[in-house]
Image (cartoon, rainbow, N blue to C red):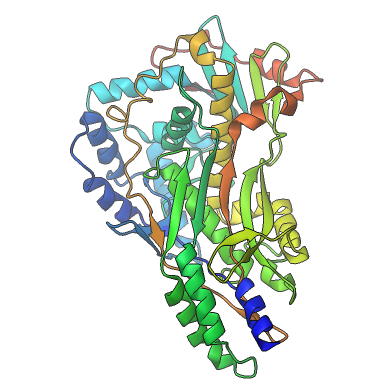
Length: 479
């Protein structure tokens, strides 16, 4: 009986890891990249080191061999952010700081303006790197008369917070970033193969899980002695060894990839009780029972998020766009992970709570706002490719599509992470759950069966309301 109980304990046990990002680390990584790039890399590096906008996910430290570690910075009174907002208002000027309910950006005109900066070896201005302060990608429009592909949405003044995240001055929402837009467009390029899946996963190795199970069988903690939990967890983490980081669909050396990893990690920390949730909500560890299997959680898009005008000249992204889903797994004594059936009630409640509270969570913890922006950018890029706006506009994306001209792969790629575990006794059982990752299939959202109809004609009306005949030469955004 004791043997059976220990085997079940092994099946219920796993670990998790956490990452965050530091601007200084990212700048060091950029400096250490190979020297086979041209002046555009210098443009990007000069811009990231200018002291204006940060160029890294907030809080991640990555060693030269790809090991991720945690770095935490706090500003409990908000003094650092207030100072940065004041500085940013003086720097970006009145029009940008004022904001707009509907700001428009022509992608071909933006690329042309950036190409001029590249040719002159000039740093990119803040308004380019922050996409004129867009806080939401709401629309994609195409105008055949001028061959403009336009993205549009609400915008406001922006600033880099004390962790380096670009946020709106008024709402605190995460701002869309040029480097992420370029990564999304490269995943769905003109005339190229689309990225069917963009994903990140942080996983223990099979050998590590086998050694973990052996440790659990040989060193069971004592429910009557809470002090035994700490040494047990230390031994379990050592037995597992490093976890592997897998990134697919985008380069692992990009801000896009590192943001997905951070969002994935911190969601897991909340679930297992190592980070307090940003809003009042149920977590997995709060609701878990003694009958849990190993649980995995994934962020995915809400694929019913695209409303398209009847003439296919416009698309609107609707809804909150992100949901958390879960699944159960069982770990055999050999370390092999197999599907464990449907997710548990505790896991389901956690996923439902996270999804329902996602907009509020994203405001309190901006990395989740950044994740939603990544998903929106990927879906928009997939739509642009699917409709062949590239071909219609004769836009070859020669600057954005060339890493030698416009570098976005400027970070150290994460490869492994140290496990970090939490444990609680439920009755006489010790439970330590595991998380999963981020997985998106942007093409699914733009397939005909998932598109929402523009029954009221609101998307077409938004498209027709945009005027381009007043734009000056070199102007790429307007209200």
